[in-house]
Length: 349
Image (tube, rainbow, N blue to C red; front, side):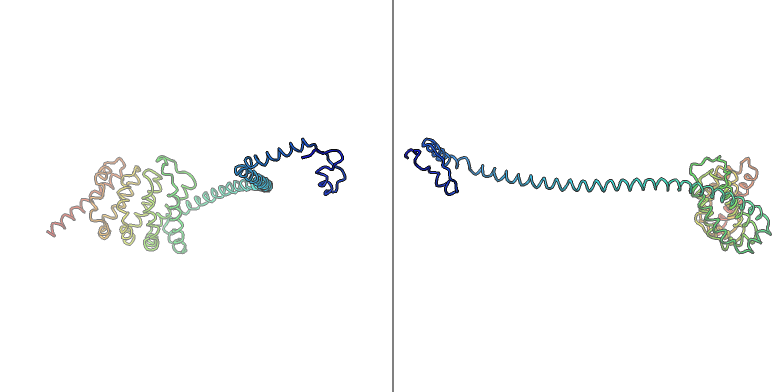
């Protein structure tokens, strides 16, 4: 290649002219050779450098760039969603605060309503206790019982009385102390209800009515006596047992209660009660069963083996005079029944 002098046109002049330039670039021969050498070296070494790994790295770089752009877009979108959720959270927090304030107001109103309801309940219980106590006293007169029957309201009254007694007994604390003083209006109320039923059953007309039209009440009384724990509210037990005893004076009443499979186990349990009055009334009810042949037929054949004879003998030695006498009479009735059954067995043989 010949050297370029100042009068000759540079090889780049055509390029400049093609590009519309009016100036020339002068290149030395040595620089051109060096440039040619570098181009040849690049042609030789470039394929070795730009191999498949390089291309893969380039593609990965482009992919990472694309992922970066996508990540930035997603991050921007998440940021917008976060702002949206934050605004919703603030709105919900404000709403929650309003509801909390409303709840506090409602809670105060609820406490006030409970207090008023408690006061009304205490007033109604006191009024009911006073009214039923007066009716209990009035029902001791036979004429008053007849007037009550003539009024035609006895059946719904007995229904409500049975439901009230059932609700009260089922709410009793099983761990109540036996010596607890039952003097509240509620206790006086249920005592008066049981006393009214007892007085009604003590009169012939009332006893007949209960025996024929108040079977649910009789079932309830026997059920509740079985639910009450020994030593708990003995006064109520005594009144309910007295009511059953008064009903048993009627043939129809005795026949009905003797058909209950729970009656004999109930009597056996109550004979072992801690209270002497409860034992006394249980013995009287047992005597009603023993003196009536039809009632004995309704009982289980192993009546004698089911009764706590040994405990009845202990009651026959009690310091309580009436209980002692009643237990002795019950033992005599049981002895007559035993002799009668033995005689019947010998006759059959």
